[in-house]
Length: 292
Image (cartoon, rainbow, N blue to C red; front, side, top):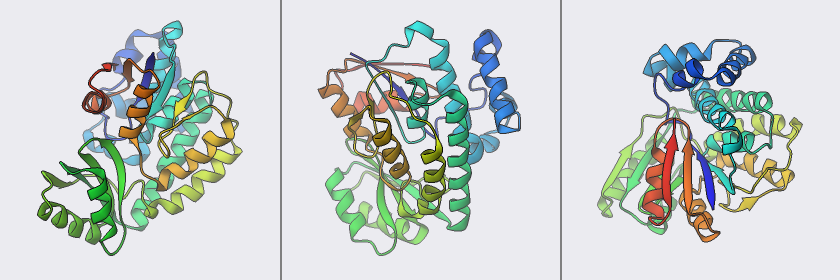
């Protein structure tokens, strides 16, 4: 069984999507429609901007979404997934690719999400850190022992969890993880504490937009980040998407569940190869590849 998976924020690079734009008329039309919807030429930043341009949440999220979704759409009849999943932002890409949301509506939701998250980051400065070489239960135990906001945010693969919270809490946690034998406890260069309670203002803002959107049944099950389970009911998908901003991304559990349900091949659509690496470390028997 074939799964298509979609990356999240952090996979971006300057020049992403340019080959698609230059060589595929359908892709070019979709990129130009995105420029119109967003009210600025995001393609200029994607193709010829700077790394700093692309690091802005309000740019990064639509850019990664566009690259992934347009790739999926240009595959035509070759896009025949048995299951789909997306890491954080990538869940929106998966939903549009699987027919749950029209392209323009999906893009508008991603724009709303990006702006709301950037606003939340600016209101409460915060950070994330990667913890390498420690099992999930120990990460959860140490996070729970810290005063202030410090929570697991991304369960990426066995032995790799990203934590999220206030600067002081994450700094204290990193010291504890090193004492406990973690191979690495590394603060990340991100704009804020994604997938933590500090994103509550953004969750509330996004919830309103999601409730107003029209969701359809997907062409195949989507394994959602909040519970790592397959869903096809549009109302369930909506509620899980709203919860996602303040809940951890259970990516390693998604991969294990998709493999248990028969996944033999996983294809990453979008910039970078992050998910290919995470899937390879979680389920070595699954064939992984990607398209950019």
